[in-house]
Length: 130
Image (cartoon, rainbow, N blue to C red):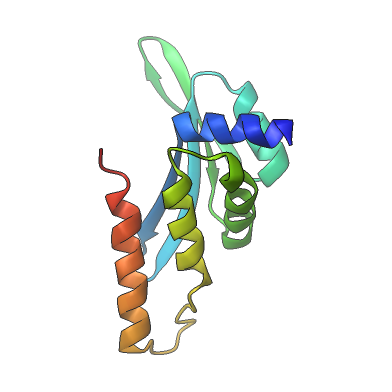
């Protein structure tokens, strides 16, 4: 519990919940944390999976980024972090709600379902703005 509370606070400050559109019109969920210190990112990776890579150099400092792309691990991470999130609490709840809506899976999506998914994506993206 203490580790999850710590990671939630770290994620609130340094993390991102992203919904990105793929070329075929579908969307994917991604979690990311960027930091100059790799050690806390290794804790995210150990607990949730994902990858860590060197992002860029700024003022002769290396920046690292942890990314989690897969649907199930993203849902698990958000569910576990949610009780302690404050800044990103609403975004996490919206992302979990969006992920629970049925996907098209190559089938034609109903207009109502498409509108629900689009509305939730807009709400998620609106939380990015100050």
